[in-house]
Length: 303
Figure 1 (cartoon, one colour):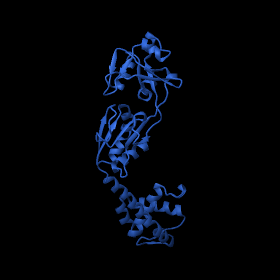
Figure 2 (cartoon, rainbow, N blue to C red):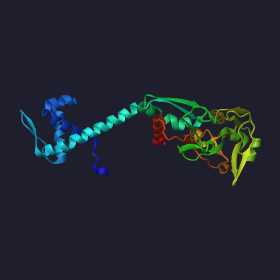
Figure 3 (cartoon, rainbow, N blue to C red):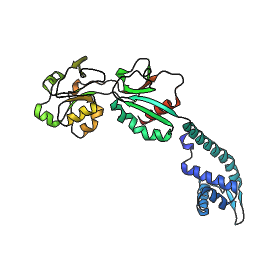
């Protein structure tokens, strides 16, 4: 259907008013049914008649009847409005029947990027769906650990998973506060980080801190860093860097606000290559749970 043929909200309201008047053949009863005054009803009808360019009703102080133009419009409008009402009711019933528990595993950074923005609208649309969220940076076995889906970066998605991209490619970057750089200088290459206080991040389940990954042309370069602080929360590492404790290594998007405010500066940009961003991944299934389908649609709509 061409967009120009779609009625506006005002036109639908005018048609509904006309159909109710035609059904009751009484302005007083129609006004009562619609919850408006008879004068407001008359005004709406006059606007519709001006729109179609023809009188739709014969009106006297004692009676109301349809004109020929009104009879034709009623024959077309009444079924269309009924069909529209049925479609809306069907949509409401569909939402009512989506229920159950949806278990989602999500990396910490991805929660505020993807889940928080859709949380309220999703809950209002599907009030009988319980979102059971586990938020950490473990790379869990989705099937064995009983999850319906997970949100993680593309590099750690199993090949037998269905993966839906939620955002663009990402970069991991070195970050430091202006105060730290004023005291200690700025590293020119990743190897210079050996002479700096670096804030380590430990991947869950690992004994040693994460090696910082850079690109030297086309070659990957892993750097072992040391410093006064190691944590298992990247958010905390970013905040510590903003306090001048040292240099942190984090997903650039996760520190976007601190970078925008000038609390943190991006270092070694030429050494930071993009990598596949966040995806929603889940096992391949012929019959997807309606709650998961609804959640996927919500995330796609937001992103």
